Image 1 (cartoon, helix red, strand yellow):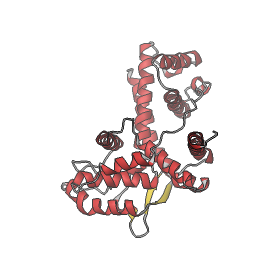
Image 2 (tube, rainbow, N blue to C red; image 1 turned 120 degrees about the vertical axis):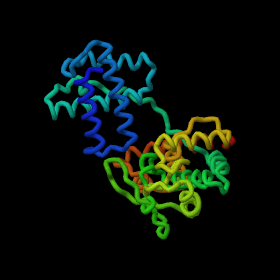
Image 3 (cartoon, helix red, strand yellow; image 1 turned 45 degrees about the horizontal axis):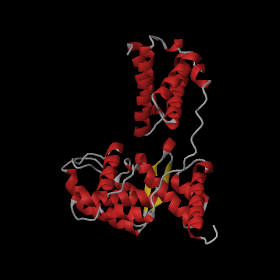
Image 4 (cartoon, rainbow, N blue to C red; image 1 turned 180 degrees about the vertical axis):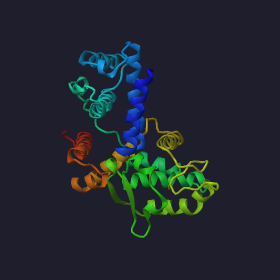
Amino acid sequence: MIPEIKKLAEEYVSYIRLEKNYSSYTVAEYEKDLRDFLLFLQQEGIEKLEDVDYPVARLYITRLYDRSYARTSISRKISAIRSFYTFMNARYGIEDQAFRLLYHPKQEERLPAFFYQQELEKLFEVTIGEDFRSLRDRALLELLYATGIRVGELVEIEVQDVDHYLGIVKVMGKGRKERFVPFGSFAEGALQNYIDSSRPQLMKQKKHTKLFVNLRGDPLTDRGVRYVLDDLMEKASLHTNITPHMIRHTFATHLLGAGADLRSVQELLGHSHLSSTQVYTHITNEHLRQTYLQTHPRA
């Protein structure tokens, strides 16, 4: 990679991490997207950011399609590179129209995946145990399902952010927006057992206040949470791909399916726009439709 461009990319990554306060997950994804784009420039023999015009930007997107990237991934890459060029334009006057002119690919109409209650119970069953790891995994799973928080929010929770008396946890959402999310008795019991019995033993003299830790006592990362969930899925013999966001989808779907109003679910999820929450009504409506078709005598 050309040293000058590499230096500018590093400057941008520091900017979104320190000044924009993007989550560690978002920073890592943007950094990966930017690295991929800069590798493309190197392969095309383009040595200056100023030399990227609209045809070059279109060529890059075509290459992404050739590599079978999903539309959502391509859309995120466009956003990441557009943001990078906006930063370069503001700081150094580099022309940023190439990616501004690009359209985001039309998204596929796919409903968010979620767990049915029976599947979720299988996950909880495999966390039963009194060993340190089982106590941690159960607390993690219970809190994710009880609150619907994002994985980036989960790993940033400090021990003191949990109010056991009121049954709420303070989380820092997107854009550094702070909110308080309630949790129920199941999560409370699991958290208390983990904090009292498991976490002190896992810490192994480590000095930090993050709520969830790995088996070495260090703060659990986004990747670590995904590893925990993958392990639970394997133990439960559930043949599907699981992500922390799938637990979030399940949280919202189950609430709406039980009669919760859309505005309340929006606030609990930390969505800025109601349209982001409305997708879950499509899930519950489709579930009702399938139930009707399967059970009504004249469906």
